[in-house]
Image (cartoon, rainbow over all chains, first blue to last red; front, side, top):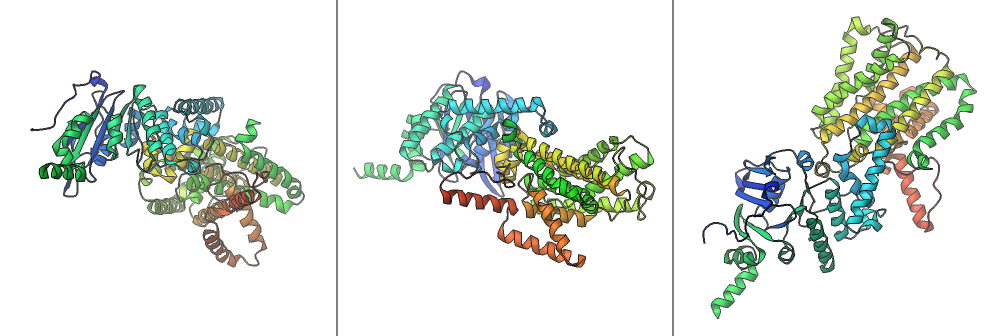
Length: 277
Length: 327
């Protein structure tokens, strides 16, 4: 087989897609990415997998404005957003979570979600200081909207709970709520299942599926292949800065190169087993 | 009820001023101190917003105050502007200066930003010394008129503390808005702030500009009250003193800087010699950094937290030690 395999048809709503193509990034002399790409479509979940150092985090950071690619393009609905600073990428409708959730521990859940509304707040800095009626009405509206977001994710009961008292799974959901609060049409999740129990992972995948069902495109960077398999329609596999293969999880899981590279030990031992037999 | 919940610090400040007022008003000397204390409280509050909320360790508040003071002097004494109109310029000028400088220096590391504010203060002070035609140079400026009908120390003291309360009110409004939350986030974690869509340099500069405007108010009040100005009136020493007051009281808390101001003033009065002030200030800073990095307010909050968990129930909120506004 030559080149990546495209088993799934081109998605119908590609016009509003978030597309990265030909992305190249070099750190010093080392090429972290050598011409890779990924496409996320509204309402669909795309998985991005690969071993440590394969470049998946770098691609993720390029698509969210945290790393500026040396070459290649990131477009959103056709508009070029390559190299925009992260805060403007968020304003364009692409939000991200962090592998280690970065939420002030002392804050309560609603405050954490309220922070996500920064872009939809219209009151100016000095207007906020003056605190006239319009500013107070806006603050009330933001609180109601934050409660609505929490309601939608089934977190309404936790809104006055301090973030430090939550389990890791719930903290990750608060992070997702914060992305939704920012009005994101695309949410990029950085290893959301890391450190989660089996039960928490199941809850999280159900919630991720719900979010996607509302028309949000999701890119999932994940180590846990079982989770990727259960959630994603398309998977992109990276190895040493290149796309190793791309396709439906079932196809990818059978690809011998993926078995050798990503699924590592399991794949090799299976092959050895087959060879011995 | 909602006002109490949203403006706890403002109400505590009003109550404290009302309680202190009869005692202060009974002695003319104290009235004079109350005005100067108000000027310092405004400066310390300006540090609270800049350092406590935006994370800019500022050493230029004295310089911003002197810009406000000279603006007041020029507008009222030389150009004959009506009372209070010069306050607009006294706030706007330092704010514009701070915003412009902030946009450039907030990209730097926190330490480099602090040094940049120190340099900015020096540049302003050198300019004031050398712009003889405008500021009177080394000789200074005399005969700054009173603010309209406000003439006696009592009236100045009332004005000073009304301004302090107004600043506390605005500060609380800010911290309960999206912009205040943005400051909290970016101070803890700039990457997180960017992921929320916050333009870090812009938010920090806006807070720095607000802080400079408040320092400008302090300078405006000082100029009209004292009626003479010289380059030494509001110099880097004042910047450092205001910084110490804010840090000792608790820069991250709305009322922390005011508590620090009152404490420093009281202790300075108890000291036998003025020469010991520097020693005392340095000692106070070292002790507070060792014992309570979040200042007296932070220490109080920790003690209350410990007492509450010790009692196993919610204790009644103690006056003077309100919950941290910026969580």
